[in-house]
Image (cartoon, rainbow, N blue to C red; front, top):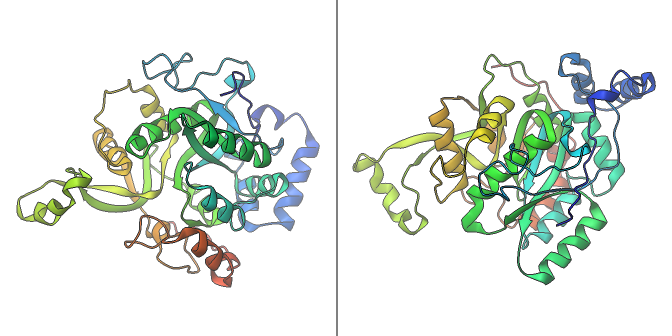
Length: 348
């Protein structure tokens, strides 16, 4: 891990009033580009600027001291002055990925996630969202070397100083939210998996909706068991008969937490809340304890592309797309998935 993290100045709030030319550029982008870009720029209340620097990967040390707060007390060890600047964005989207998922990242970069810096900048300018692949570390030197090579080539990662293991996904998810909060002053923090087909334009419009609740847990909701040991999946059908307690929580491939909710997570001390074996159940249980507003949106878990679908994956057959490397390319090649118009977000 580099000792001096670099930071992507996605939407530096200090530049908003400094350069009138930036406002002009943004206006031109809005009227000649995407409808959703215009809507995002028109909401002056967000306070987002339009000056973009080159996309840069971010390396974050989390929980080095073991007290859950890192040296900065907010979930990330940010030692430089630049690191203490939280850039204003509407949403930070962390695409959770792993060392075995190079093929998935390659497929994403061929579809909805631009592979070049200029393309990624245009997407982020138009939507008000920042996109980064999120990955931990491993003791395998060859895997780390391959990751460093990919980072150098694409420069679109958030690197967490936490072991990348399936059994530790709840810890990685919490580390992600803490690190994202430390780096970005965002309206929403979005956790997404690397095996879904996403429409960033529609996600932007959904996050931009006016909401009466400042503490929002947004996702495609389901009722799942508190008892989630994967070795005892056979027990679940008996849960209803035996009075097993079930609670509402979002499917894991895609969900979002508002800034106030993530601020509460950041304030948590390690081990103050129980970790379950599944990260979506873990987050869902915490949301229940925090008494946040659950916003259920089925457009986040469509089984096929529609005129309003935001995320597509093979629900409930797979947690994500089945054969994602192949399916992502197939979906992107269809008009309804990649080129259908973006409709205004539903206010219901």
